[in-house]
Amino acid sequence: MLIRRPDDIPSSEITPEGLYQNRRAFIGTAGTLALGALVAPANMGAAERQKDDITPEKDATTYNNFYEFGTSKEDPAENAKDFRATPWTVNVEGLVKNPRPYDINELLGRLTVYDRTYRMRCVEAWSMVIPWQGIQLRDIINRVEPLPSAKFVEFTTLFDPRRMPGQRSAVLPWPYKEALRMDEAMHPLTLFATGMYGKPLPNQNGAPLRLVVPWKYGFKGIKSIVKIRFTEAMPNTTWADANPREYGFYANVNPAVDHPRWSQAKERRIGEFLKRNTLPFNGYADQVASLYAGMDLRKFY
Image (cartoon, rainbow, N blue to C red; front, side, top):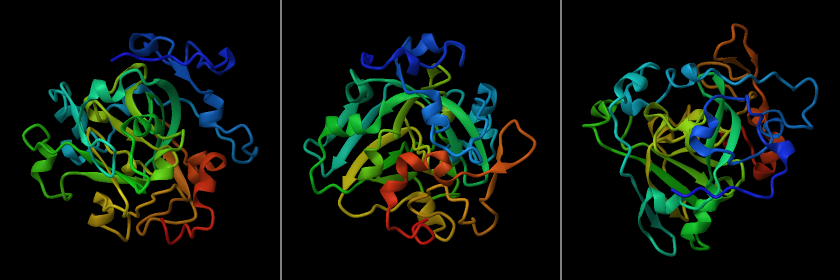
């Protein structure tokens, strides 16, 4: 896959060389946005500003929710060891100019790959800070040319119980599906991740292609994507179908709206002992709150 490197980003916005190891092994000096702008917005009040050390790679790759490989946090790293993510085809369907299967290299090739360090917040009230590499979802959407009638974009995970042993159980209705409103999908923070910590995406973290939406709870981050479908009506999504009382379509991080079984006001950052306050929209309110102007975020959770 050819990687286009942006030539209009000032050197002051390039992630420091020592931020994480082996970065050049994956994308060299591929384009990046400022760590400060993405992890701690510059105009965040002093009371809201938090220290955001990057989560150790070992923690981020061994403590996972990926039910296709098992429901325990350690299961994905163990059960996905032999999973092969090549070759890989993504079917583009629905309200789009040319619906058809795309080889992953055709779908992503020549699009700019960025380094993006994001806070990631799980609905279970734990969080991490992860350096991702990936492509803005809007660049992929523009490539496949959805029709004007498309209002939502739906994603589907590979369904292959032979290779994904967690799918042999009925813990969720398979295959896993998630979706975004089109303006959410087109937001520049929304990423199709292909790597992390300067390396190709590990199997247990969703190889070869996963969704990263940093202002939403982690269950929106669908992994090992094989289908993108554009629709006019809001699609069903897996967790909302499985338990709509606990998992809404929007899944925006909102410390004022508790999960029915626990508070969302605080979170445990992996690697830390004390809990910290949860930030509205996971700290990205300045960038994304306008998407939900006028919406009751207690109702549309």
